[in-house]
Length: 76
Image (cartoon, rainbow, N blue to C red; front, side):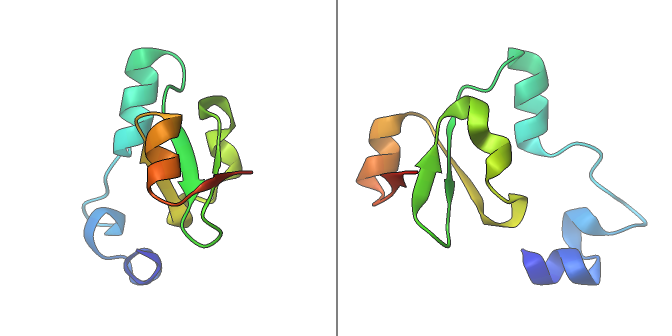
């Protein structure tokens, strides 16, 4: 993801950009964050309302806290 972003590939292509990331669309539709967010690098997760604390390039979302724990993530 970092390389694609850096080189302007895929959804980061400046000639055909993605105007809204999927999680941004869901957030706009739901009006509030509802997914736990984790960081790939640290295997830590945060509550839905703290998702902005997780760097975009390392962010993974979970349906609930139990799913985050099952994936080996621990609460930050």
